[in-house]
Length: 95
Image 1 (cartoon, rainbow, N blue to C red):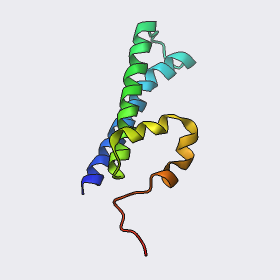
Image 2 (tube, one colour):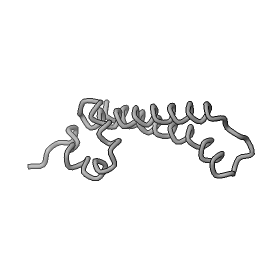
Image 3 (cartoon, helix red, strand yellow):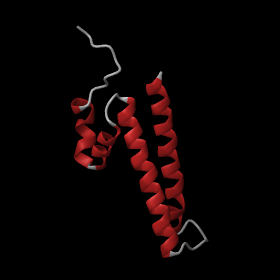
Image 4 (cartoon, helix red, strand yellow):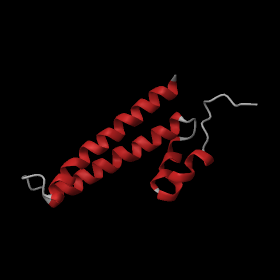
């Protein structure tokens, strides 16, 4: 039951991360008429990164591992082998 809670929190923080990235993307591509200052862009990027790291940590916690192991996913090659290195500890093992 606890892992469902962590999974939902991870989804929430990942969604918040995407929401905070939208103004930067809209301003950079010209879809927005509002100009965003450099300070505001940096602030939004930092908030987005914080929420994304928090989501990765919660995902790792939901799988039954120490939360900081989720930060391994910040390195792109690790995304491909994450499920092999860190199988879900909460699932019953098949024998």
